[in-house]
Image (tube, rainbow, N blue to C red; front, side, top):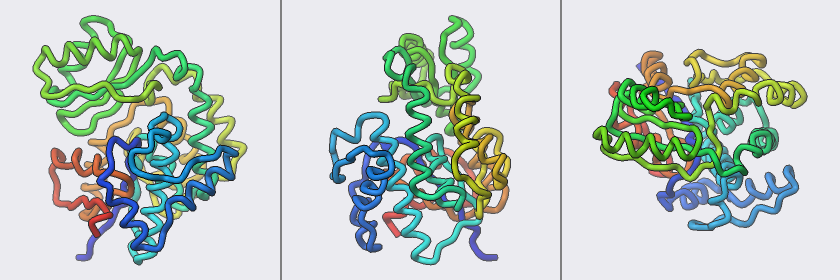
Length: 297
């Protein structure tokens, strides 16, 4: 039986392997051409890319760069004759997954990121919200800590059985991280994000975002996308719109998404993006599969 392939798209860039540009160049792809296209679309002059460019540490700029690199990498795989059976996008990786699936063109994907960011900007700019990561505690342990103090924070993503992401008010996120350390967590970290993505704090933006989606060019996916919200296969236009709203305003579950891919027989996965965050997470997800960082191909 041949390999069943999935393309996976990460979210924010936490670090680079510093082999990303080399991989793209070997495949005759210039990342700056992708950034230039986004500059023209959004009327924002994004600078040329180089590693450790502080400009791309800002939240919106980081999302744009992650999107550009992910799209470029999936284009490189397509040019090699590699075509996935399924696609999944981790958090903000949903936009690159829509591009790779054929549901949106490159420019529309960038516009989606820009719209979503600006829609929730009022929360971001207050500086009162944030996100954090907890490694080494189970879901129920963190839930118990959250409920005991009625924190304005919640688990918004399960990476694997002992790796969770939380979001909420910055004050309560920090307190919950501290309590988790006291409880025995191996590692806790505050993320460099000022928006409580995938949380109840963004629910009020569901309807405005959906109204925007009804005005732009989106079509059925040519390659099914596995929902990180409820793990269904997303293909039809209306399902894609719903998934975009869910991804912004509801909890997601990457662990269940990976389990779904494995159960559907996917045995070869390619991380289409900078760094190797998804590969790191996968070390604690059992299954008969291989997940490859594509710059090693």
